[in-house]
View (cartoon, helix red, strand yellow):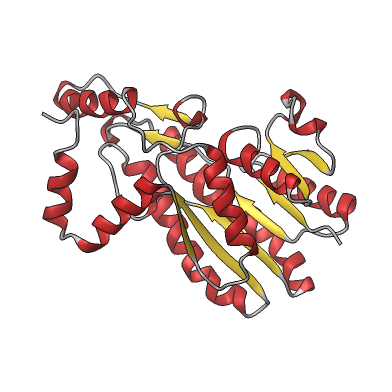
Length: 271
């Protein structure tokens, strides 16, 4: 019997690559996104159902899950992938942007998860995969809002895995490094505020973004890690994706704060 996976944020990047990966492995895929009418690739694939789901709209979450169960009879796996990044000096961000960042990356994830848990509890099985980031274990300059949400996702996921174990459900966290996705386009909110004192660090960071090194991985690599997390049958909680993720997170774990900050300050682009 085919298993079924629900993916949020499946219109591009990691979400879309994950939908394609699982479809190729013979799964039913509920590919959810804010504007499914614009999707021109996933809607051509067999056993893929497109659903409208905006993580800021609880009604759309409930409807997408209900429609998916109605179509395929069951949902076995949830991939909480939808999200975006807000970067820039904290002082520069309007309050509404701050609220949107946390509502999308944290409250939206909670709403989707909370909505599907009764279905998993009834079946006494299921897997919840939350897409975090290396930014859930370490930070980069100007990312106080984004990293705040990803640190929250890590804490929520780690604690949730205890209670989900009681109902036969696994919780997994996937931590990608730098990925060639749309994150720097429509999934990115960069505020500079035109505050002179922050310009040196803004210039250094934008220089790094404009000149990525060869450690940037394709979304398909993350999709493969997600597939392994879902299917490996273990209780492993965290999965890294990308050589840079291993390098940076190992260093963060093994270095003192001053040592790690010095390494980060010596990155290309920093004067």
